[in-house]
Image (cartoon, rainbow, N blue to C red; front, side, top):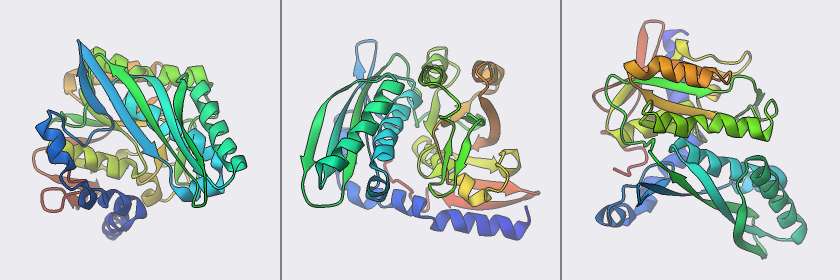
Length: 320
């Protein structure tokens, strides 16, 4: 990668719709974050962690963009389940149940949305236990909320300088260019995919991982940045360590959503055990960078580096 390409790549990521959509969160927060903090909760994680006996209840929600719902309501329903389930497992938890909220202009569309929800709830072994459906004028939409449980957490708040930044993902997949989506679901049965996800709570409960997030709609770059901001640290991401499928633009790959993908903070002593744990299921564990003191997310390649973002100078989500 040429030095000029590195600067252009960083600019492409900063200007991307994925980054812009994340940045609208901060102005809409109002006093909600402060109210939550006053009650003993910290916002900014993949799921809210609520102390419950010796463990935690996990609560999360995801909405699917109306454009995808209009284009493919069945896929939108499936995607809503996948996003929510990933949020629970990324916290070191296991899903318990889902409720849905569906809005459509006709019963045919709402039925297709729910068919997708039902399909993936069965595939990922998480029951839909209730919800709400409305047939009315307006753009179609689907949102889900999910409840989970965790014995020990993987949080966004506990990455430390010196930790290795790991990208854990299934490299056996297909690139969906129009969606910016790395889809590794076709090569796994539902039971196999759940077994892959179960490695996250196993890693948490074994003390191998204490911090991480799932690779969401703002991709590797945005997920890393959200993790840095929540943990109040910086990081250097070494682009040459990231395997990019042939024909995929680096900017698209760094912003891609992964059906199975997580960025984890791993200590030196735990590294080999983490590689062995995920590698036993043919999952890739790549050290793509290192967590640092400070507040900058730095991209490096070819002996050069570029600051992608400094969360202390310009908040990204702005939760903390």
